[in-house]
Length: 470
Image (tube, rainbow, N blue to C red; front, top):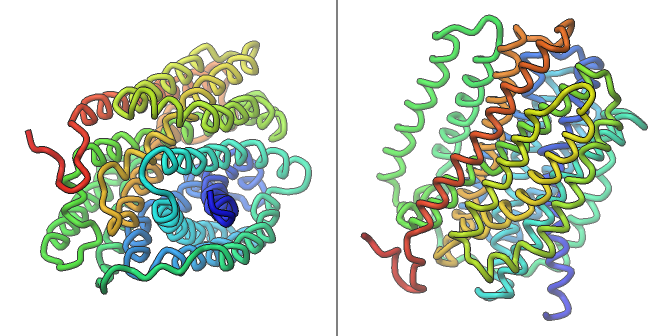
């Protein structure tokens, strides 16, 4: 490996680590944020979801910007936006300020991820070297998500929830400066137009879907309040797809949709982060709101799964993918995630600690440690270099929107069963609501496993042509 590549790989991995960290770091801190800023229970999931929605909604634009403007420029811009928004989150005086800053953070993350993937794809040739690089990238993502669950508890308990945002600002600045030095300047292939209208429409779809699912869990939910945003999302998605077909340079090139294995990977990716988002929410609510434990105690029970996730991703993921292939490893990893989540059905006040540890060791550690790298690699299966940014944007859109939807579904199930509030709920009623949420985090990865198993049976594409058509 050339001397500069290790530093470049470290910079790229640090970028996705930050992005993944902020996907989870608010979870354990939610009760503290709720008390400090007087956030209502119906609004509380949006502290996490605001980031996820803009992250997922802008990723395709970030991918196309990468293809048009170059990976280096987009990566540096994304890091700068992310760092500034992190600072704004840390000094937020009100819920509205915090939600707005979280949404801007998501925009910064949406720029860095496809650019980082394009940097890796352009720096490492297809084959074992690229597989190992993407495995390291996925390990950084999985480690960031897991570390966020732990650091959220440590910083909230030891200092304040504000430090979950403020502590990383100087580190982001350091990575930004290093990236400016080591990331090469590549000239984009040809001039392409930017589809800002399409990006806005797709972000609107994400917001409306998550809003509809979240409203379903509120006490005042009706067919109208839930159905209107979901119907509007469907209409907006139809308009987006029709408009994209007429554009010369669409946000989502139709040729990407013809890559069957990549598309199957992306559809399955909708469930990859849905389960851990949901699980971390369930664990936080049960440990803190029902059992009255501290953020630090909650973080401790999540720590073993977090550590194992990083180890499995680093040691096993690339080897399993090289030896057994994506069609076997991807669905099998999602089944492992579901099995681990199912352990949470055994939750009770007496067993809460060991059941949570066992569940997350299997789900986060063994399952997600392999599923995330598989999803990331699968999203680029057979994609030409000129479309790496768009393909990475599409793949990460599926991952992040799926995470937001998973969180919204589980939060809606729990809130709906409890009448919208955990405060004052009898322990047995709260536990029944938690178990209803567990049903969701078991079903989602199983659905993803079926999609991956069926979709990846399509023969791998050759290097020059499109996927074979049955």
